[in-house]
Image (cartoon, rainbow, N blue to C red):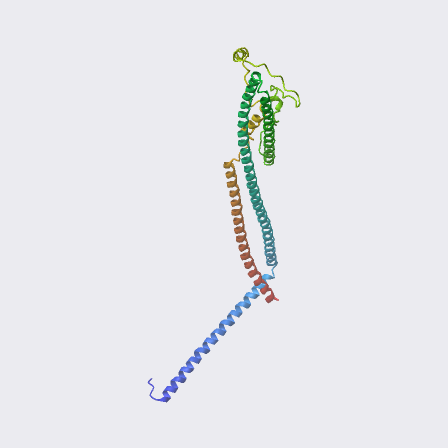
Amino acid sequence: GQLRSIDDVQAAIKQSDRRNKNIKLQSVQSRLESKEKQQEVQRQRCASNAARLQRPEMTQKIESRRMRRQTIRQNEYKVTSQLERFFETMKNLEKEFQRMAEEIQEKEEALSMQVALTEKSAQQVAILSNLLSKTGDEMGNMKNDLEVMASEEGNNKENVKNFQEKFLNLQQEMMAQVADAGKESKMIAENTASLVAQHNIELKSIPESSPPSSSSQTSSAPPPPPPGAPPPPAPPAMTIGTRKVAEKKTPAPPPGPAPTSAATNPVSDLLASIRQGTSLKKVDQDKKETSKKRWGAAVGMFASLQDTLMGAMEERRTAMDEDSDDDDEIEDGWSDEEEWAD
């Protein structure tokens, strides 16, 4: 109806308050009834669970679940320990591979330096051998000229004697230089051979060379007169006519000794040996690159296997955690039921 006075308004307000109170009361009563129903259902469930837990097959099932979870945890610990040991072994192998690669690099650098030194020594010995060969030829010609001069002129005896002494001194000095060069080359070759033997590389033997004796090259030269001895008598003076007749009658001097070949000259033997080689087996760069690629592939495979095993272990651990959570929920429910049963 219409509100015509204050009394009507107050009556309407009171009626609305009563209606709201009734609604609230009904809501509280419905909640209480619902809660009582839930408690009743829970009591019935606890009673049924208690009755079920008292059966022996349920006890065995609970025990089997616990044993299975314990076994799984033990297996997880074993697998984790084995994986950790495997990863440690892989790390040690990787360090060992790196160390071996560094050692191989250092040995190759040392071997390259020694080979370069040997080649440089071979070039120096080649130059020295050529110079000595040319000097030997010139000395042979000079010897022939000296013999001719000694047979022709008597006035040049003293000059020839002095020149022969200088010549012999020069020859001995050159032979000493040859001996020193041979010793130095032999020492370099021995050092190279020892270094190559350490690196397991074949090396052809270099024949030992001895310095040529001065007696072999000066056997045909007339010995110098001993000091203090009287000079030999001068030949009679020759006129132009008698000189021409003597030149016609005097046979030509024999040709000088031919240059020594590589078979008889120790310097040439040494030079030929160095040229042919310390025949070092050169490091095959293709094999080296192939071994590096294989080593890199092996390391990559180890890394990939490590990542795969780590991923598998993480997946296994996640699955184990999920199974463990499910079992914990089930066992927690059963333990509560056991308490309620008590």
